[in-house]
Amino acid sequence: MKAIYPGSFDPITYGHVDIIERCSQKFDKVIVACLNNRAKDYLFSPSDRIEMIDEVFKDNKKVETDMFDGLLIDYANEIGADVIVRGLRAISDFEYEMQLSMFNKVLKPDLETFFLVSSDKYSFLSSSLVKEVASYKGDISSFVPPIVVKKLESKF
Ligand code: PNS
Image (cartoon, rainbow, N blue to C red; front, side, top):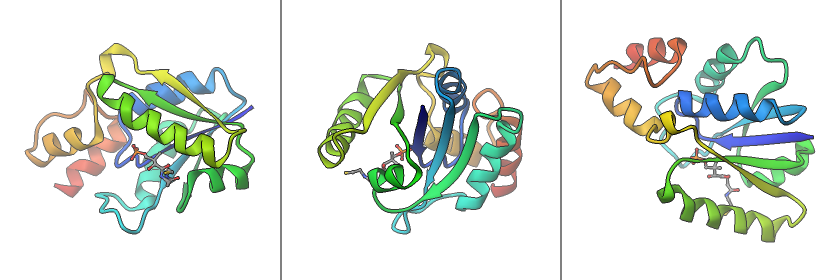
């Protein structure tokens, strides 16, 4: 089975890493798909975001990266994905995630969304807060892999 794990990954955090690793133990392939929405303001370019993920998973043959624009269901169709995987951190994620999965279900009924509950040590983590801490030169090494620390330091 091929899973697609979509997101902005601006940048990847240890919370994402945890979901991808756990996912790769259950599926034959995990495609980490970076959204490249031209209307959105990202800190990192799509190629930078992908480069960081590739570096973290360079030894895991089940994990691949890609970039997509447009509807997730169309991209999933194109690559022949069997399921969408999303991580759930706290109750606050639930409403949005449920809405997203329901839209996707109506648009493409045979594509299921699987939710993985974040490990408790990462349940508070978000890319936006990591960027905020980094912008004030705070220590972000508990939240993101070393390559991301380096890239964030070069941004701020
Ligand atoms: O990391 P994020 O920003 O929470 O990821 C959100 C993402 C990429 C999963 C979602 O915005 C998405 O799938 N966007 C592509 C457009 C789409 O298919 N939207 C859902 C149908 S309403």
